[in-house]
Image 1 (spheres, rainbow, N blue to C red):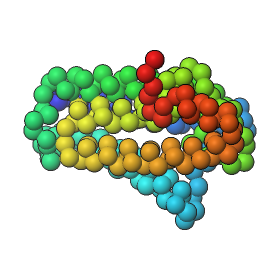
Image 2 (image 1 turned 180 degrees about the vertical axis):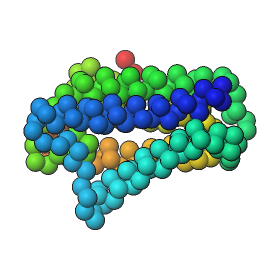
Image 3 (image 1 turned 90 degrees about the vertical axis):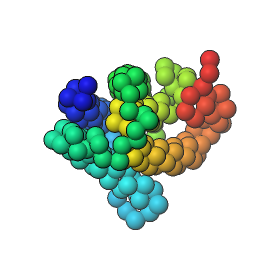
Image 4 (image 1 turned 60 degrees about the vertical axis):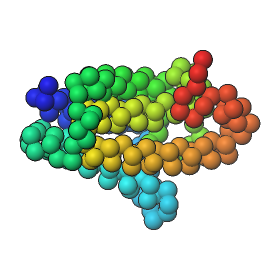
Length: 203
């Protein structure tokens, strides 16, 4: 199992990044004529969130590469022993795969409204169909689930830290986007907000 995980984990996050960020962004950029990555690079609070999110992704990438190169050392470092079980690892692998598929579907359903960050220069459509009927933030939900799965596959304090920091940053970003969407779409978004929960609704 360890040999499979050491190759699966870095390959998974590389594919996640290439498909969900690079590939989808390239597709949308060709259609709208601009880069959909609109995260600010200034010294604002919003810019700081974007910076830490990029920093976390870089650290996560380095950690997965270390897992590949030094599996015995990394798997044993800061391990949470009571979670070290094949069942948890299988559940984690399943969650990671489902999360990737979920995120890709949500991104395709967004079409040209897909952005990395808040686009103040171009009004985008409010997407309420598909997976957005069950979650106002299906992409962030999928990313959170992928980190939960990663933690179950690699049950270490470091993987837990990625999950906690990633979740906090995504929750901040969600609230920043909600403020923007209320300004842009007004009562239409408020009605949608009352109907569909932030992360997952029951139907």
